[in-house]
Length: 89
Image (tube, rainbow, N blue to C red; front, side):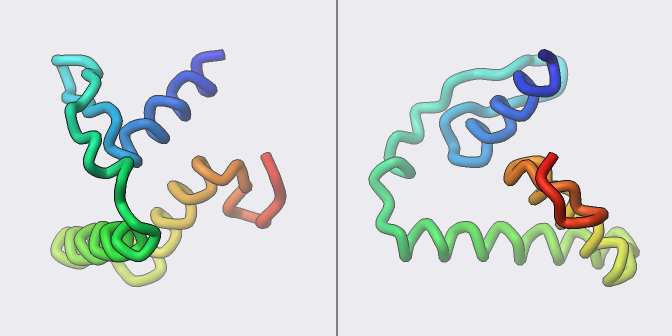
């Protein structure tokens, strides 16, 4: 299923094992350091990433609700939850 494959690529990219560039495809990264992160360091990196995404959303003119909806939609993809009702997909 193409959706399953796409979700797997997004998950691999989220943890830094692959990088995807439009027109260049997906490549395995050499960022093995992320695999050795402590839970605290990983949490801080993730929070920083959310901060960067929030700043981008605000600069793009998205309202708080639009940014929140986009974030929940992306989280739902990774956690297998329908963001409209909080039910498993």
